[in-house]
Length: 282
Ligand SMILES: C[S@@+](CC[C@H](N)C(=O)[O-])C[C@H]1O[C@@H](n2cnc3c(N)ncnc32)[C@H](O)[C@@H]1O
Image (tube, rainbow, N blue to C red; front, side, top):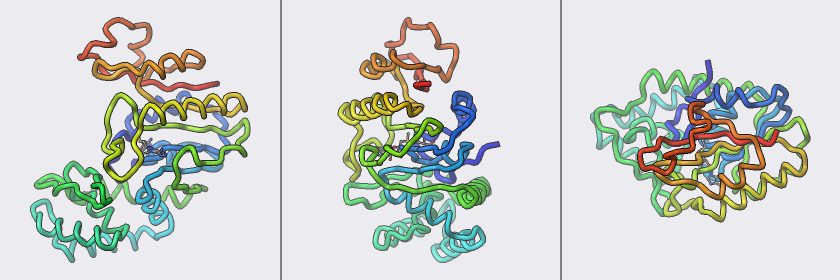
């Protein structure tokens, strides 16, 4: 059983963790989760040391807070908010008041509680970096599943040796890595959209330029004999990522849905399901 991020993170890899770990090497000294997001991969990997990076500061701040705060205190803080704002599946006003307070104070517990009651548990910010997801009327609330995930996730954060970094992937110093280390990259996908992949929300957008720079960085790691795994999609809803397809020929490709192997016809049709892959250099 794997630990699941208590946030409903777009692009989270929880559901395909066993496919991912199947291609990971047995021995990993330092594991770098360069685009950690919901950190579903990094929190579950077997490695001596884990680096958790994302350029979104409030995610990294939340993980640091979850690691440093005893679970009982966390749960108390959450319950205090629920009582203070009378939060429930039906109280839109309470949700909006908490959202206003969060946007004024940027308190990290307020942020977590908001994600419990927001529409589809989504995390969305506007240009001013104000949280603007609407209320998840009649559906979203702090339920026992979220609490279970929160407890397991924060316990695991406390057990493991994790370094948190909050930088653009190009600014991370990877020069000290060695042959038993592994760099895992799960960037936004050029040909599909997540709300973090939206340059209008105060964070850097993911464009062909970022994609190109990432592929160059992976080539450089390869030259230095550092292992990498890249998660991505080659085809999605009639679109293909030709840059990636061309580049991937140098490396090994593992199809998440194994029935796609050798099935090149119709990949550009609009009805094509997403062709999700892992690309490794080992
Ligand atoms: C697909 S999500 C990762 C999901 C994660 N593997 C999981 O299982 O939850 C991609 C992440 O890349 C981050 N990101 C986007 N551009 C970035 C950049 N230039 N530098 C660092 N992180 C970036 C986004 O904030 C987002 O959290």
